[in-house]
Length: 425
Image (cartoon, rainbow, N blue to C red; front, side):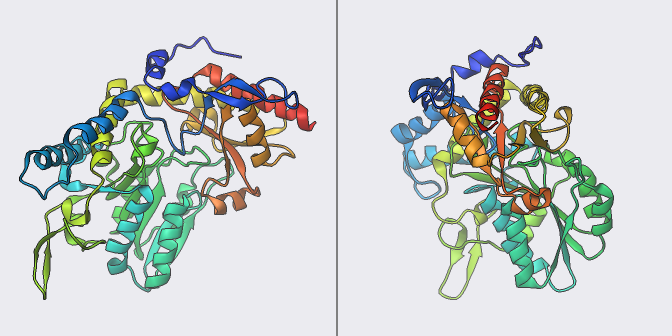
């Protein structure tokens, strides 16, 4: 195993920014059943759930709390002014990162799920009604599927699902049939967190707009791993999370075209998002603040901007190239086993993850065995239960990669899977 192809990034230098990768994991690092050890090196392959946080981002968090911790937009004193400037500039930085026109189009939320819910409630409750349709795909994350499903029940709208083909890609002919003049919203995951499929968002956006519909893009797995430009995609809305892209937990981003956000009523009410309040009426602040009620995620936003700087220094084209290299290598190595099934498109046509199963072994058991050898993967339905039902499986193991992962770590994964094969033979 191994490859002679050079990495597109300096992985060793990057790894030095992530001290958690030096951890040792308890459990047997050689052969299952030989007894516990405490010296298995961590092989972290659960990045689609949460990436690790580099030292510059940790330092940005510490600098905020040590130097200018204060609430924003509410104080004349110097600390509040410094915090306000840093927080507002974080919106500008994120806007630049995804090609938005400015901070007015960038809302900070708790996570991708919160961003989907904001659009579903602030836009969907007003825009949808009986006779309308929302088009999703069969590979949607629960954050999108459940949210639109429940909004449809509240409004009387219909939810339609574009098929996933046997090769794990979206059936675009079926999607084109489903998107018609009754469609008000198309909601699509950019990169599937189970199949690794990369959906043709711009083509779907064109179909939606041809019928007067809007498109919501779940960018939770794409924005951290590849260049994403909302203008090129012609996305009406796009959401992603900081904790999957070297940032902190507790912050997500909702991009929305300015004219759409301006037309929408707030989703949450209270302090910070108001301009004028009387006992009878209230008016709202300008964008984006009218959607950020209460004390916002101040340090998370500032740290997210630092994470964006970090990724830009690496280069998002380089991030994508590195993910492509690792994903193709992992796909080829795992499919070499005749009793391992990998789900989704071929290794040269997917995002940086592989979901797989070992014949006769539940994914939870497989994950436990891998953990004994220091290999951290995800096991379960990955918040895509309907897709797993379609695939005829209860769960799958998922290895997902990021900028600090190496070919040698994939070799460790494959060795651990092989050990599990022998254990259950």
